[in-house]
Length: 294
Image (cartoon, rainbow, N blue to C red; front, top):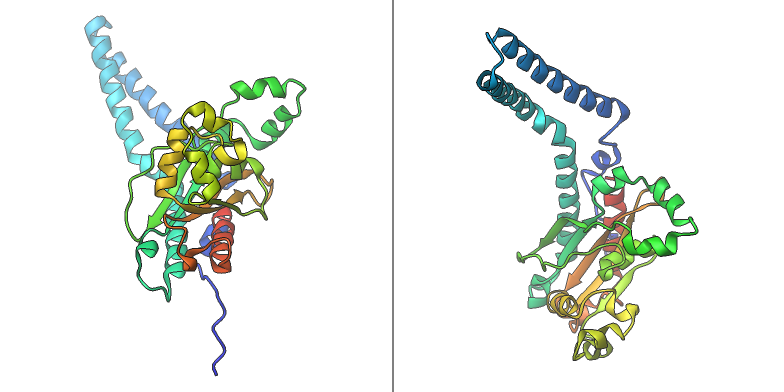
């Protein structure tokens, strides 16, 4: 009998993912491009205003309009070049999510549950991580006044970088943040070896969703509510019945940069029991590790 082929999820773009997209020289090149654009715009404005016979209100306004238009042309010409690494990275991440989905669908019979299988990748916005570096946030949290500042702390909505499935679905409309929703809790915990599981069809959870008011729902505790409103929890339960999640971490600093989830609507299908079927957990871990290197 032929030995079974070992489970292996190959990622052709893994080598590309390991390479950093923003080395020091690349950042310096971007800065230089912005400076050159500003210089061209200013030179255009200076030449136009210099050639004007008199800088009355009309001539000055016309000169500014022309200068801005010329500058805008220069900016649009290099805009795609400046943003190419970001777009390329997003395409890479979407490719990783798609390959994860394909591997999970292999040797599976097409059922309603399979059609609802989805892979999502959420990330902390890059602008937030740049403006508030991780070291600064760690230092800030150790201040004696941190407990009082948590109420006003900036926690931006997470970005859904990839969402793949055999069937297309509109976004839930629920904004996840650090500490909010299963995704947000996963990021807040920031435990690399931890896999969070939420079974919205569980009897205890269904009883909690049957709460008659928002106050009654919040009394169930954070372990149940995940800091969601009752309305948002019901909406998510209808779309994603069974979810497993794992944090994305920066390999150097250990910063939580996002979260990967695998979900199905029907948790009663034994072939898609995430809590018992190890291949889903293995696919989740592999996907998270690959995206962390991107």
